[in-house]
Image 1 (tube, rainbow, N blue to C red):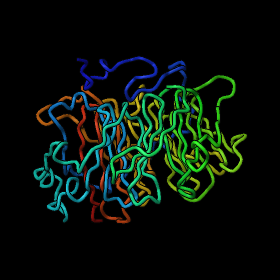
Image 2: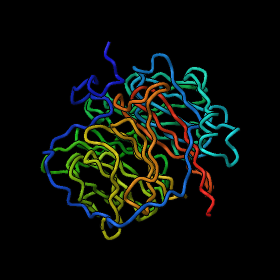
Image 3: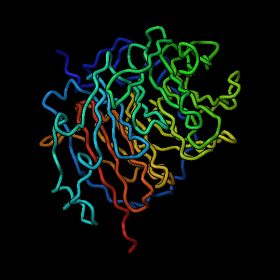
Length: 397
C-alpha cells in the first residue's frame, strides 16, 4: 500500500494526482510581481493556540483536500482521498469551552482536546471517487452540499437523507479541481477541470445541462484550477488557470473576460474574494497576491510559505482581514492583509515529532464569524489530521 503521508509517494498520474497541480510551464521565470516595502514589518496583533486535534489510526490513507464551513458557521465538512464527506458540529467537536476566555498561549496549549474522526464527526457520506472540492449550497439551510471529484463528476447530496440528488459529468472524466455556487442565484453552479473548461450549470434546465462552457485559454487548453463566484452581489465569476492567469467573467454575458489578472509565475490554484472588488489568489509560484479587480492592479504580494507543486489551501477571514494557507513544509501560515510577511506560523507535525519534513498542510478554512476579537481557523493535512486553532486579539499595551 502506498503511504500517502509522504509527498514523494503520492501517485503522479496527471489526472489523478492527489492535491497536486499539473505543471506545464518552466520553473525558472523571475518573479515580476510588485514587492512590498522591505522596511515594512508586520505587527503580531494576534495570539493563536491549538484547541483540538482530530485524527485516526489509518490517517495516512486519509489525506484531507478540502475544508468548508456552512453558512451558519455551525457545521464543518471535509473531503479528500478517503471518499467520504465528513460532517462535524462546531459546538460538539471543534470548540473548546475551556478556551472561552483570554488565556496565555502556553496555558491554552495544555488544554488541547484529542479526538478520533469516527467519534468526532456527526456522520459521513461515502462518495464514488476521491474529492477535490466541496461547497455548501446557499439557501439550502445547510441541507445540500455539492462536490467535485477526481473522476470529473459534480454531485449534490441531501445531507438530511444522506443520498445524492444531482449529478453532472461534463468534463470527460478529467478531474474537477473546483466547484462553487452563485450567491445571487444559488441554484446555479460552476465547475473547473483539468479538461481546460469552466462549466456553468442550472439544475432547472432539462437534464441540468450546461448553460455556459468557457475555455479561458483559447489557444492552448489549460487546466482550470479554481472557480469562484463573487459572493458580494457582483455578477462576476473568477477563474484561475494553469496558464498563470486569472480570468473574470460577467455571468450575464460569458463571451469574453471582463478582466485578466497577470503576475503569477505558475499555475493559479485558488481565488478568494475579500470584498466586492478585492481578491486574493494563490499559486504554486509560492506567493499569495491581493488584487483590485476594478482596475486590475496588484495591491500586495505575500511570501513565506512553501508551495511549488500542490494544492495547499487558501482561506480569508473577511471580517478580520486575515489570510491563511498551508505549506509543503507541513506548516500553516497566517497573514494580515496589510503586510506581505506572515504574522503567525505553526508546525503541523504529529504529537511527539519535531520534524516538519513529512506530509504537508493541504487545506485551511476560517470560520466567518462577526467577532472582531476572536477567530477560529481549521487546517487539514495530507496525513489526514485536522487541527483547530483559536485566535485572540492582543490587548493593546
